[in-house]
Length: 186
Image (tube, rainbow, N blue to C red; front, side, top):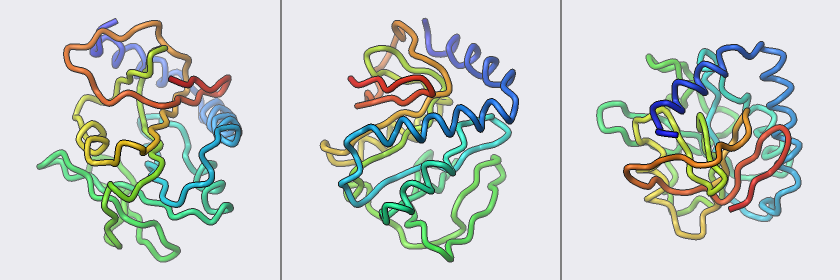
């Protein structure tokens, strides 16, 4: 399927999910994540969920990261440059909903993407080869291009894989993608 058709399909599928379904699927994804051999690293990057877009609730993964005493970074998007700044999440980091509905840090300690070991990647759809479809602004492609080659890219999906995504230009593929039912490794 083409990217744009997949964006429409999965945005529509998400819109049918109840809050209870999203919470249940989000908790299942966090439990699946515990099975991956990714927990011996230091710096983890995770997005904060956009509730109005019915994204996976990443709070469950945040609790795991805090419990394992990891250094956690969260993104702050600049819609003029389509770049992201990566802020170290601390107890006193102020979070505010941006004009785009994204929970983001107001300010904090900026972390270089080359320091990151694991990035949890938001997506709308993915395929069995590790290709993904996001919202189409390219924030994560630009960001992942700045990370070190050994950085693990882990997609989080409320739905299972598509067989194949037809690409005009290849985005950065995932190393793994976690769904409520299983872990895909590429």
